[in-house]
Image 1 (tube, rainbow, N blue to C red):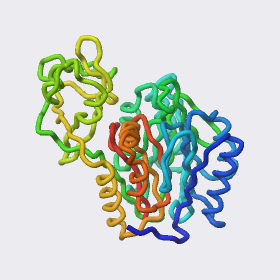
Image 2: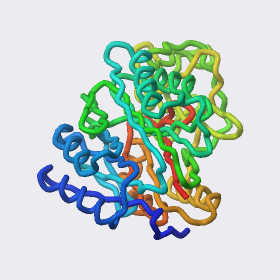
Image 3: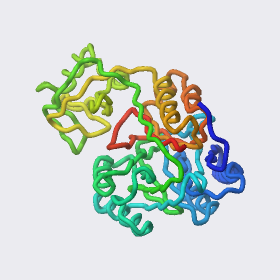
Length: 383
């Protein structure tokens, strides 16, 4: 895999340490990487250890007039490394980005209304409805508050507004504190919001999705569920934990995080798995998930494969489809995948699988592409 070092190459950066040092270092490295070129859009991801106001305003001020999007994380990465407690960013240059617009939606009063208002803001800035845009040249990046369980409704509203566009992104994290996350547009920050970035591109792009699982050959039907709270109460007419334990091959009292990590369930569509990850056994034998599953759905028990190899294969395929070169990418990787990498010591190999493409990414509380998924890497690679 090769990268194109030209005016169409993005600039990426990563910084750690006190905010007074990290932000100047980050913006200095981004501007140096642009080498005098103008940014068309900037995307950044930061540890929740930082106060968001200390990041959002100075990063936006370093790129006046440029749409800037950011959020809190459960870890950050670039093509050079992955870690926690820092801030990563990518500046997409003009040429890669022909036009961009960003909007921040407040979801605290009503999720649908807040999402629709953000879409309306974008459309006013663009002077056109999202559904009228050419999907070959337009892309919507989305960052969603990760603590209120609203991703499904946000994605539904975005799908209604822009049915032809790829909508790619992730749910903000807070370094596994599970207390409060935030998203930012320019110098504005929300701890219960959605941040949108519409990109009109001057180069082709490809969406990457890889979940590193294959069906285990066991189908389970959701026979009773508390959908809004993401709890499956029954599988195949039995308490969910009992049916799940049978499928995995363990006793119900042995069902734990290790089983959940290795054996999520997947909705199979066109041969692809859309992962739903269990997170806990709840009172009464139900299973709480990180994403909704509807009653009546059939899901496949999944077996884990080689995450690094699958990531490399997905990125290589996307780059090959772009003609063999890429100038930049933005990536969204599940926190559960990061925890697996931490346990296996494969974080270095994970970032190497991007083949040196300049990028920024973060470890999320959920991933977006054609809906809300878990234990997945989603992202976009630019030609």
